[in-house]
Length: 275
Image 1 (tube, rainbow, N blue to C red):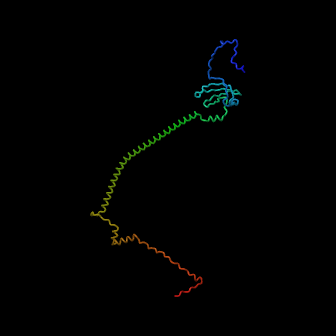
Image 2: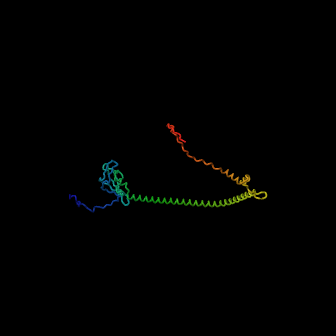
Image 3: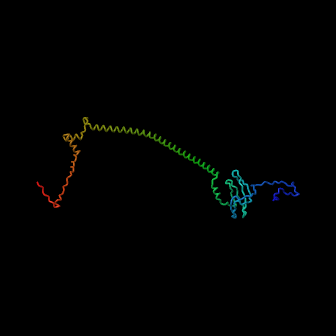
């Protein structure tokens, strides 16, 4: 095995190192591509022939440096060939999820652990969600504040309208009150004048032709004049007004019940008592 580990190379006798020229060709344009040896990062199925390629199978692949970046991390693309139909399959790195992403030529097999991991919330997504919730909360607080301000303005406007209406009613009531006061004063004067006229007519009606005041004869005086005596007539009037009370009802008296003599029914004869 020592013959295979040779450190020197064979140079022919006619070797002339001066004839070797250093050549510099044009630089390669486009993305940088290099051939690498890698293993399939995940299980996949070829979309052309349906061949299954398991995870860990080795390939000679072409590595391409893309212009895409995740923050400062460069994303690489790899080209491999299907082992059955030689169709080209491409996939690239995914530094965000610390995984690989299949682009075309094949379909990644379903993996339960991967689905659970994708459903989990990453730190970046959690930060974005918290920031979004904070912004929404700020908007809600601002909206609530605007609503409170609008309610306050409406309450102030209603209070001002009420004060204005009250002041207008007071002013209108003052003018109307003055008019009503003058009207009531005139009516009171008219009423007093009418009452005075009625009293004067009544006083004139009870005066005689000579100017003396006529006295009113009462009903009692008339009855006294007709009956001849005031005491008898008054007693008669009281008797008519108040009739005598009814006669008292006699109290019920209990009478002893007589006992029947059953001696005759039994054939016993009693002798009459001697006097």
